[in-house]
Structure formats: C-alpha cells, structure tokens
Length: 118
Image (cartoon, rainbow, N blue to C red; front, side, top):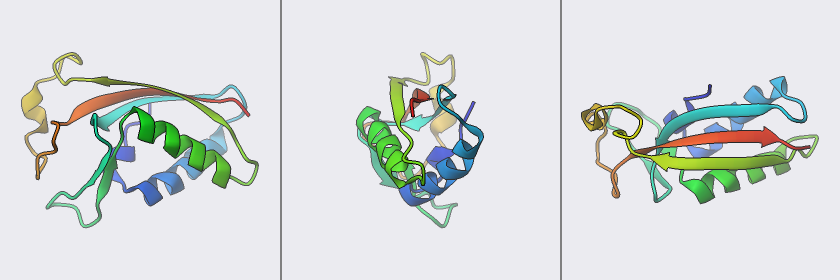
C-alpha cells in the first residue's frame, strides 16, 4: 500500500514513482490511498517548505500517463480511483484539522489501483 504521494509536489511525485516502479513488471499493481480532492490542486502547509499536490480522478490518470511517457521503457499504466470521505473510511473528519489552509472543496481520500499494462 502506497500512501505518501500527497506529501510531495507533482515533480517529486514523478521522481518517487520512478523509484517505486523499478520494482514492477507488466501486470504489477500499486494500491494505496492518500489525501484527495474533487478539484486537483497544489497546496502549501505552514509546516512544510515545499508545496504538495492533491489529486482527483483526472489528475491521477494524467500523472500516470505522463509518468509512463517519461520512463526509459515507455511503460503504460491503467488507473482506477475513487474519492471517499473520511467518514466513509471510518475515520474522524477532525483528523484533517491539521491542514492549513483548508482546501475547497474539503479534503477527502482518494483510493487507487494502478496496474502496469506495458
């Protein structure tokens, strides 16, 4: 389970994915969840020096398509994702209170399954 991309900006997410996927082959899957939003956006926390990027469905698919194009072997990825609320995950929404500034619409969770198809 992968749960760290939301702590990084887009460029650093690509770099992290390049490392992660050195452990993959065709038909490998990457599953995870992380902070998500109905509107993909970069955000800045006061406690972190670099901005982070929160995905929605479309941006997560665009991310894996761009990533595949940038890999030396031109990998291809199938992206599946679902936005879920903290409550539907069984979590207390107050657990996102540390996030400043608040995102609009409010932060949710994006669950994903990424499958390497080439």
